[in-house]
Length: 294
Ligand code: GUN
Image (cartoon, rainbow, N blue to C red; front, side):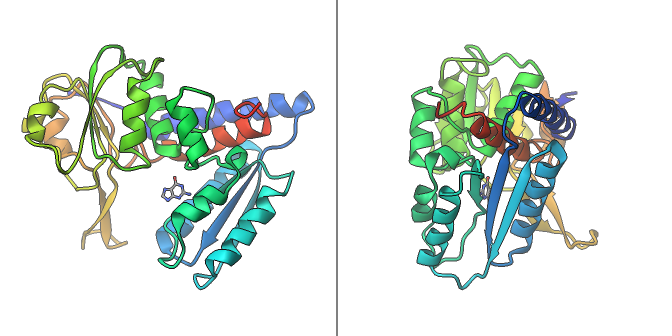
């Protein structure tokens, strides 16, 4: 039986810590942190995510601005919106919710956000600073995973960590963060992906597995050794007629098979997901306090 890594409770405690830090910061004359979010189009899931981010800002005592823009906006118009926020001294952090419509280049937009306001941590300057172990904004999902490992006191030193999936926003940064000097960190990391041969031979040797490939129930019980720590990043919507909303959320881990062998495991939902908003708040506070780009 594994112990659950409870993202809901951990994220709630993190938000309380942030709120307390904001109160101290304001009491000492600091400026109220302010996060701006841009939402292009009317994708249902994106709307929910952004609205949750804005709600979380209010909860911890931040100001927030939500700019809703039509799906037909041109890339140039969107870049001008980003300019406006880059130049607004009251705004500490800016996120442009992804995905964007196909006619807009995510890379151009991401690189247009001023690195000092890039609280998503997607700008090459922040990615580069992370790789060099300089102060940087760490993006939401990797940050959430590190915090979960830290809060549950999971020893990563010298452990073999197998990351499945090399995406730019999860697998790749996770492999760097787990290997770098620090705690959590100092792990021996294997980064696996769609071209990896005999994946199971790697996962069977892993003390820690981070599954971030986006294939529901990919990691099965026979792929995991006894006592492994399992982090499940997947949240695929799978059609489910028994649910009122018509779908259920499935992780990348076959929970019923893997859980009995694991020492710790994240549930889906309620594991990594709830942790991600806390990172945005944390980064926005760091920005208001000028702690990353001092
Ligand atoms: N869409 C899904 N995850 C994210 C995220 O972390 N940041 C942004 N901006 N968009 C997303």
